[in-house]
Length: 565
Image (cartoon, rainbow, N blue to C red; front, side):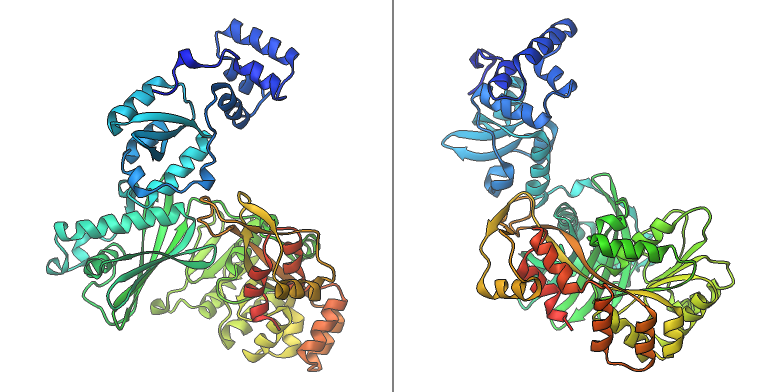
């Protein structure tokens, strides 16, 4: 053992903290007195009294014990090292094997003086232990990251699955044949959730099975598997999702629910046949997650203020535009969640219902039962609604009923596919709505995109390429003092990004804009008028977030400029 209680520094933890400036000598005397009276450790009292944070305590202990403090965000741990310590023991003791140094195992711990734990780990690994200090929370996160790829399927509990009699007995695989597929599927669901992935892609190729995760809106290669497991894996997914496992030509979709790490997760599954076999995409929806507030989405202050005013209107249509995956549904949910109160009857028709909102009446599209957006909207009018959310306006009938609902005193939210806030007007016109009715019913339009946030753990200043700098200067004039990007660390999976942020432009329909639209003015002229009246364009909001260090110029060019007007 490298560290024992006899080998500890003569300087106690309080004296170390005084020396490095975390507390003063007078505070140390008082804390020492409290610790002696309560028969407590000095470090316990320091944290309890709020004089130091748990992180400061770990740093001070590292100095006192002369033990290295490891930044786990910057360390990649090899699978061979992880195999030395079973996951259940790593979680039990909250320790992580870091590296093999000769015949010793470097072990990251929250308390390197815990001789009993060091002894247990040494007995299991049959190696001398070199204890190193780490923050307990970071150790837990690192265990999730590193062991997530190699196991943990036992931590998944199926909550909802179809009864076995729904499939023909002769079609079901034997338990022995299913076992590898079950382990593989559970392992990837667990790893995807811990990696913050929204989707898992299972894609057969000529000689391998390709697995990819969509993280922060971008697909990333994860691993390749032997094609021998393909049929068992797809069959297992179909059984769990209540699909017909004998049907391999037509597209199918289904869903089931699991519990992972105490969180209820809804898994939406879609299968379709490719030239090499069936591919599947699993959409991961965390039903335990709390809804984002409007203030968390990335609205610039001025735009947010204008949008909050729109939400106070008693009637009208508020439409969101943008491509698939631009965050429209999240903004719609945050909007109606803010309006949710016992005084309002809020009704939604969605395809599908992604999150269950307490106190809101939600309906799901079901074409087989003739439950469509249009039919549901028509039915809603007889159910005394105050606020209506329509997942998407796709056809003439839906847009006309939505306009009628707005004109008869209801606040209606919906989305359409349009490139910008002005383009939403012309999209409604393309769907068959009259210009004067659009202007009478529409309260405002929002166009939005999503960009990835720079990882706060590995954020660094950098010098952008010439073309990137030119794009910034064209929109903003002079560049800021510094541009930022993520260098890539373990917490962000080496991507340099963690999380997403919305980019918005909001247009309210002034009398001038309405007049121009009715008179068939070109979109460019209406847009110029809206900007003159205070609309902040998508590009400008995007570059403001670059200036603030929230995102990067390449991310803006990829998501905003690629679909610009």
